[in-house]
Length: 235
Image 1 (tube, one colour):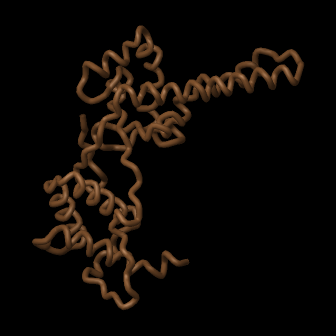
Image 2 (spheres, rainbow, N blue to C red; image 1 turned 90 degrees about the vertical axis):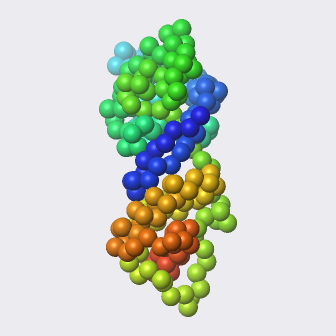
C-alpha cells in the first residue's frame, strides 16, 4: 500500500505506508524505553531516600506522559520506536505536520488504544490512519533507506568540468537534495510521470525549456551544481 506525497518541488512521489506490524513493533520499542525510564526513576528515588512531594512526582512522570508528543515535535514526526522501524508521521497533503497535528494525534491516542480501536481503523482504512491520524490529516509512512553514494546523483566532478546550466546557481542545497532524492526514487520505481514532472519544474525554475532527455537533464543539473558549489563545500 502506498500514498502519494507532494514535495516542495510540486512533484508527487509515492511512499509505502507503514504496516500495522511496523507500528506495533515501534510501539513496543517505545514501551521498553518508557519501562527503562520508570525503572531508572524508581531506582533514583530509592537512592535519594527522601519523601518527594506531589510537585516533584509530577515533574518526574511528566516526560513519560508526554513522551509521544514531545518525540514527534522535536524529532520531526518520529519517536525512538519509529526511528528504529524507519517510519515517520507525515501529512497526507504533503505539507509539514505542525504542533497542532502532533497534538491531535496525541490527544486521541487513548481513544485509539481503547479495545485496539486504532488498529481496527487502520485495518479498515486505505491510508494507514488511526482516529488520531484522521483528525490530524496525517499518516505514518515507511522512510526509504538513505541512498549510498553510488546510488545518488552526486558524482565526482572533474576540476576541468564546465557546467552546462550555470542557472543552477539559483538553486539551494535543499533544492538539489530534493531533485536527487525524488529522481533516484522515481527512477528505481520506474515512474516516468514523476521524473517528467520534476524535470519540467526544475526547467521552469531555471528559466529554460525542458530538454527532451529529462534523465540526462536532471543528472546534468546535479552535476553542474556540484561543480559550481565545489569551493563552498570545501570550506
